[in-house]
Image 1 (cartoon, one colour):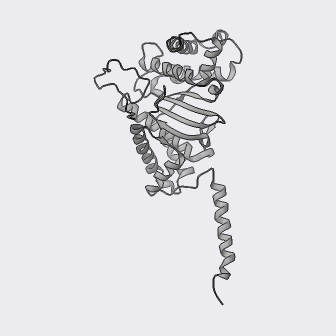
Image 2 (image 1 turned 120 degrees about the horizontal axis):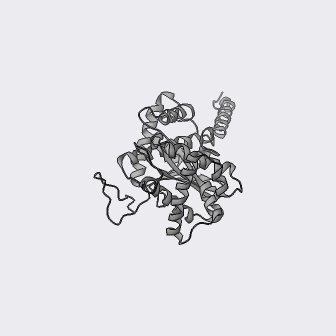
Image 3 (image 1 turned 60 degrees about the horizontal axis):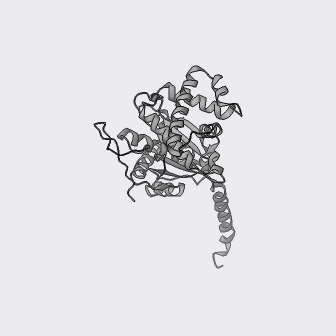
Length: 309
């Protein structure tokens, strides 16, 4: 199957009849989603030594796929959650702000993709999934601060309060941000299902949405954080951290072009093939170390029987 997506041309035009929810929209967008995937992969390799998001460690990540055949196609993260669960990531890199209005294609398409993906999820497993909007700080305060904050507050503190009552208790900027999201989501919901969402459905939908801020390049702190995690938890040689981070970016650039699934085992194999010495896999490190010690002890005991007197 050819996974290449139709994309926006450099002139700003879009092919007629093409409606898409993400993918490789610009060269910057490709670079950004590659780096986000590589950053999550570092956590995946580090296992439970690192946190990916609230309540999820690297040990919970089973695989990462770019350009997946889903409504949200930028990055799909398979999770260990007892039932089939995923984090569907829309990665949007912009040098300027993303206004939270229907006129903003970046915002409107992301919300539409979230609704489409939510409606495809099995009702009994919806709560285990995440809809993630990955953005840099440059998208502006409305998305990276106000919407992020009000979604987190709603998820943690809203309880059974009606959505209207919850909004009345928020600051004006937060109310505007969440109202913009719910308005677009309601329109997309009607297009997808023919019906407006019930309040409990909208509340469940909002609880699944997370905004994660990642900054790379030009002093971006997430490049440094990735290299710190590699140096501390993954590489036997801390001095190789920068080179390993570059290798991961290159690896996921190819994954972005071909749409293949990346697991901890396949990633470790690729890094080993490039000559990098890695620490033992965190999930098996204790067992492997114990096996090495047992083997060493047994060889020592058998040494006296290895020669004829």
